[in-house]
Amino acid sequence: QDAITDAASARARVSLDDVGGRVLSIRPETSDGDLLLVLYPGGLVRPQAYEWLGRALAVRGYETLIPEFSFDLAVTDTDRASALIQRYADGRKVVLAGHSLGGAMAAQYLADELKAGREPVAGLVLMAAYPPDGASLASAKLKVASLKGEFDNVADAAKIADGLRRLPKDSKLLQIDGGVHSFFGRYGPQSGDGVPAVSRTDAEREIVNAIVSFLGRL
Image (tube, rainbow, N blue to C red; front, top):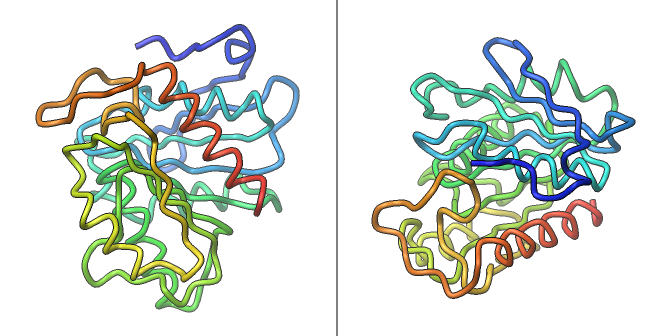
């Protein structure tokens, strides 16, 4: 899928780096950005599927890192973010994000870090995802935004809502009106997903606006 949405997103600087494995780095045109976002892809989804989002965030002054996982499964290296934060953060605030299985593993990583007395990020963005059973961030100081598509039939809506109990009290559940599970990444339709009531373009705009609004409050 074409990752470029408009002329501005085409000017983002994109590179493929190697930090304990390959990672897609997407930076603003003229700087490294004011904040670093590390995004775990969904299960069996390539990092490139989320390049569109990294480019959209680069236009707004944020750097995005999208690591590649063995077999395209974040469960194979849940703590991958540690090396990326150490290499790229450079004193900036860091936000961890993840779609579907990637979001669950991002939450698992942060729950493990919290148990060890560490809170390495300022925020967490869950996209059609929720913390796994036994992984709690309820006592964490970080801010959390949980996004779900209105007609997502892949991620269980009840489990997403229930997952809020394992997140900090002020965590927000934000609905992408008319959206579905596969609208968070450009990897095509997904088996078992719902039927969207909006265009992908409109859903992506709502996703970006929700994330940018959240990042701006950190």
